[in-house]
Length: 239
Image 1: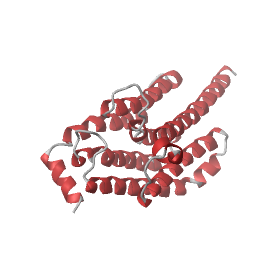
Image 2: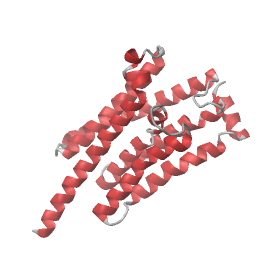
Image 3: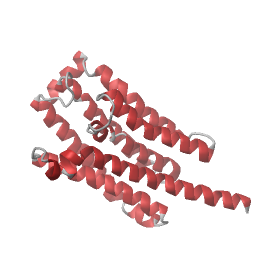
């Protein structure tokens, strides 16, 4: 009975944690893109192109889909969660395709969102967002029958996209730039580490390797952003 009670408590904590993370992701995305997308009519921000509207629609759909899937598992409707898996894979592919297209289109304009950083160098940030997201989602789909690994990899894939909305939170009393938006996004990985240690007494391998991929990619893209090889690649992309 003691083991059963402990298992029940762990199960409840797990459901609350992953649903809570999904809600936190949704709030972060809404807060970050409220001025430029969700509440743009209220703030009177410039009109968006059709591509950016499509990007906003696809990304928002993905965030809501992620929340819905976490909720389905938490409420015991795993059968529906699995049946929606194909739709999720298609939607994830759209996130990569549209996100990469937006990054390339912005590169061609020659305008960088970060002052002092040329557009070809900045291109490394959204480009590797898509690369890391694609790797994590693909791996999560591959390990879909290993539930513990699957849910951690899917959660990390969502974390890998959070730098973009956090970077747009101009209301934060922090200096703008990669250290801030990457650092705040990585706090979600810290939450996963704490969760693993409190529930399993050790960190799950998916959390370790997936988290390392996300974190290691951040300085890596900044290191290569100004190299001749990367600038050549960025120039080739815009041809």
